[in-house]
Length: 284
Image (cartoon, rainbow, N blue to C red; front, side):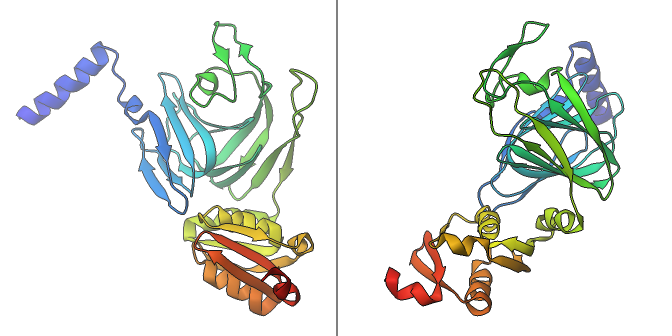
C-alpha cells in the first residue's frame, strides 16, 4: 500500500540523513501554578508534571537526558538499554532503565521516590556558582538553564541505589563563602510518612502528618497564586495533620480556624493572613 511505502521511505530517509525520531520530544515543558500535565515522549516514556514545574528534554544519540529546572515530575520510563534515562535536578542525578519514579527539586535539595524498579543516585561534582570546562572543551554552568551543562558527561559521584517503595532526599549545604568550593551533599532515606506524602499529589490531594504550619503553608502555596502570610512567628511551629484536596483552600482554612483556634483574614483575592484568634482585633 502507498501508506506503508511512504512510512518505509520516511524511516529510510531518517536513517540515511541521521534523523532521530526520539529527538522529536526535545524542548521545554511547563505547567502553571495549580495545573498538572501528562506528556508522552517519543520513546514511550510518560511524564506527569506537577504544579509550577519546568522540564527540559534533551534526547541524544546515546542518552535520554531530562533537566528538572523547577518543581516536580513523575516519570514512567520506557525501557531502552542502549539509551540510559537520566534526570538532572540541582546537584543531583537520577538514572534509571525501565522504572517509575518522582523527582522534586525543593530549593537546593532533591527528593526522589521510586514507585517501580530501581534508580541510581549521583551527585554532580560541579560548583553551582562557577563555570567549568570539560575535556571536550564545552563550558558548563549549573545556573544556566539553557546551557548544555546537564546533557554532557558531567563529573559525578555515586550516592547509592533506591528500589521500588524507597525514597531519599539529597540535601545540599548552603554555598560556601570560599570561591569555587563545592557545597557538601548528604543523603537521608525517607521514612514511611515522608514516602506516602511525596506521592499523594498524583491522586489529587496533599497529606500532612504532624507537619509544621509553616511547612503546610509552603506546600499549599505551590498549588495556589494566593499569597498566604503567617502573622505571628510563634504560630509557624504548630503541628498540622490531615488530608486536603489540591486547590481546596477553604477546607484547610476551616480546619485551621475550628481545630486550631486560628483566624483567617482575607485581605483581597490574592492575599490572606493567618493569626491567633485572640489577637484578631489587633490587626483590624
